[in-house]
Image (tube, rainbow, N blue to C red; front, side):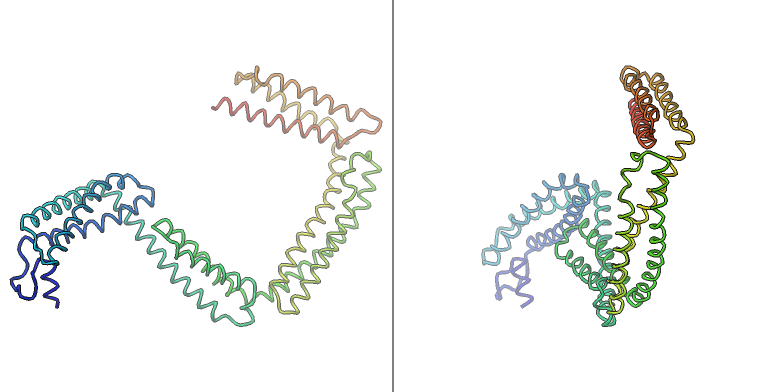
Length: 397
C-alpha cells in the first residue's frame, strides 16, 4: 500500500505500473517539499514579528507568500490529475518545478535580508513558549498544594480566592494567540500560582496572626480613648485664647473621635467572635477596618491639638509668616524680570501684594482671626509657587 501511495504522489498509474515515479514528477515533489518546509518556517517567524511590533517583514513577505500559494496550487493540480489517471505532460512538471525552485530562492533571499527581524521574532516566540511552560509547571505545583491543603484551611477566603484566580489565569491559555499574548498569559499564571502557593503556606499561621493583630488593636483602642479625652481641655484652651472662628471647623471632632473609637471597639468584638468560630481571616478583616476607624479618631484629636499649636505660634510672632510670603513674592518678581515675562506675570504678582495686605488686616480686629490669616497666606504662597513654576516652564520651553 505504501508503494502504491508513493506512485500516486509521484505520478504512477496504478498497480500495473511498476516503473516508479517519473524523474520530472520526482524533481517537482522534491522542489515542493523544500519550498514547503522553508515557507512554513519563515511564515511563522513573519507572523511573530508582526505580533511583537516588527511589521516591516510582513509587508515584504506578502508578494512572496502569494507566489508560493500560486506555486502550491499548481503543484496540487498536477498531483490531482495524476491521481485521477491523467498523467500530465512532463513539461508541466518541469514548469511547476521551476516555479517552486524560483519561489524557494526568493524565500531564501528574503530570509537573508530580514535575518535580524526573523531571529528576534523567533526568540520572542521561544521565550513565550518557555515562559508558558514554566508557568504551567508552577500552576501544577500550586494546584497540587491547593488540592492537598488541610480541610480547615481550604475554606479560608484567601485560599478559595487564590484557587479561583488561578483557574481564571489558566483560562487565558484558551485565548492565547501569538508571542505577546503568550508572555502576558504566562506572567498572569505565574502571579496566580505564586499567590496560591503563598495563601496555602500562610494559612496555618492565620489564627496566630489574627490573635496577635487583635491584641495589638485593643491596645491601640485604649490609647485612642485616652487621647480622645484630651480634646475637651484642648478645645477649651482654643476658645480661651482665640476667637471662635479659629476653630469652628473642629467643633465636631470630639464626637467624631468618640464615634470612631466606639466603632473600632465593636469591630474588635466581631474579630474576637470570628476567631472563636475559627475564621481568622474574617477576624483580620475586622481588625483592619477597626484600625482605619482608629486612624480617623486619632486624626480628629491631632487636628485640634495641631490647631492650638499653630495658632499659638502665629500669635507669638504674627509677622513671621507674612515675611516669608513677601520674600517669596520678591523672588517671583525678580524671576519674572530675569526671564522676560513681566508683561505676562507682572500684574498677577503685584496683585499678591494686595492680598498679603488684606490678610494682614485679619489681625487688626478686636478678635484677631489668626486662622483666617494663616489660610490666606497659605493660599497666596501656593499661587506664587504655581506662578514661579509657570515662569520657569515657559522659559525652558
